Length: 254
Image 1 (cartoon, helix red, strand yellow):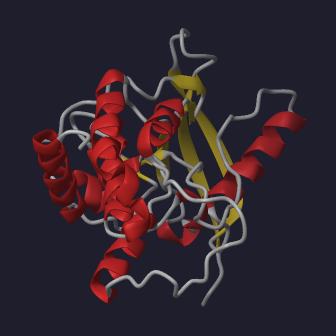
Image 2 (tube, one colour; image 1 turned 180 degrees about the horizontal axis):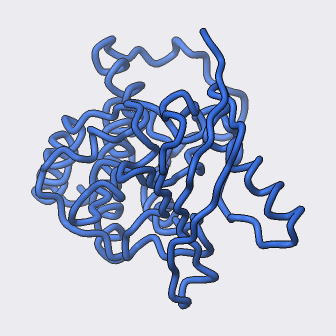
Image 3 (cartoon, one colour; image 1 turned 30 degrees about the vertical axis):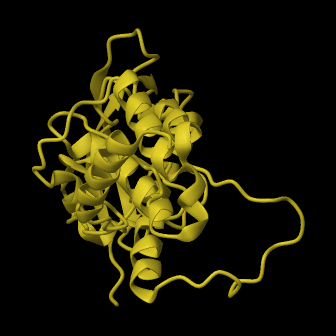
């Protein structure tokens, strides 16, 4: 693959804290390799800003391997940028052209207040997981992997749902800032395997209650969430969540 350099203009959202009034600031970056990741490009820009005695742009990052979900940015109007099924850290600069202007923003949702610049507080997701994203197991040695058979179709669906990395792109893309795809992935993952049975009825009720309490909007099933999910989580999981919620409401905790 041919490597080339490019010069770019960045319009980046800068905001000191959740209470401050933010605004876009313009930055120029030069001689950026087409094979750099988007975050590596930001590293270059921040090194330049620090060298000039200016504040670096704050952004979240950790694994840089598309696993942790922290590299959340709105890039040119799309969560994680233009490539389908890709996190920001896996987005390469060859997705853009020399001379392009790139607009970068944080997630825009009431439940995700801005901490600084491009970093938002996703504690709401942690609270939803704490409400039901777990299973009851006996302590001790790990159980043999084949000790509890799981139907192949269910195992595949559970594995696909478990791929959710909790980045929040679904919330950012939704016109209502709904977190239902995230919650559905977590509920479906555990509902499809026998290990999740003990909390099956309470899990979905508790997680949805916390989701509503944290200020996420309602789902109107536009499927914008699935379109931007870097792990391509299917909206069919929302249908499964609705089924779980309905059954839990009928049977209660019995």
